[in-house]
Image (tube, rainbow, N blue to C red; front, side):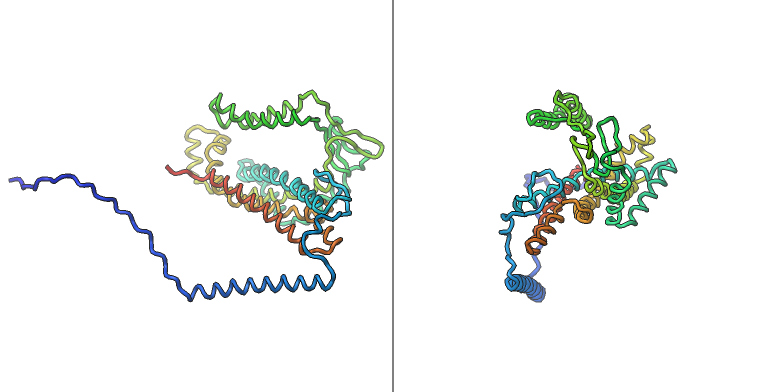
Length: 387
């Protein structure tokens, strides 16, 4: 005997139940009042320090404020990418110092990335000699202070290399001596340089649209641009050995070489440890699965392991990049005219130490915030996208 069921009524849409937002905790004066008192104490302390500093400066007849930036600096800068003369203003001198800081820090960051990845992978190599050489490099370099390494590089370049009038040379295009490194560079006019820059930006997109392979587009861009650069009809600016040394070409001073070399070797050791840890963080099963599919070790690294390891590598590598930017301030120890060197010379002349130190702190703070923003975007790009 079957059970009788009541007839179904008309279907009624049931409203979706939306969970209410969690209630905000009530305002408790026991927690707010101590925080307000602490903030007020910090503000009062900062105000007292500023007032005390202003009184001391006035008692010593030392001017305050940033009006000195419009005055003539009166000192020379040995090298730089921004044209500067001793009669220019302090503002231009600081601009030249900032440009010199970037001129050394950015190539060091690029070289650190390449060296860190190479040595990090080498630490996991099957070849015992390569693996133990990479491990020995990391252990040795990380236990020697960076300032000592900067001085070692500088003394090696200025004492062990030949004199500027008898440099080492290769094919008449590269000269190396105590006076620095001089290399031949092609001369580009503004129109050709703009065309090559536009081509380097458009080529990856064009290759992707025509071939449908995004990965193959990026290596082709610098190759084609370099080929057009080398084969362009303009004349080359070649270094020439004269009576008093090498003239012409692009010259890199011993101070720049020592700073970039020391930063690269020192930070590269830490970068290698970051890369090694990131590679070892990938589960072993990923290696085994890739080998089961017939991928070689190089293909496994490039297509399987490294893309997954980047999620672990990028966050600590961002800190390494920021530390490398800040460590470039050690250039003052070997006389490279970076921001710290220019600011030190300026405060020794005008006595406005607070303003000069504030400029140094603000510039490095801005650079690190920009680096953090860029590395944050890279970190978001390499994270696992859930569907």
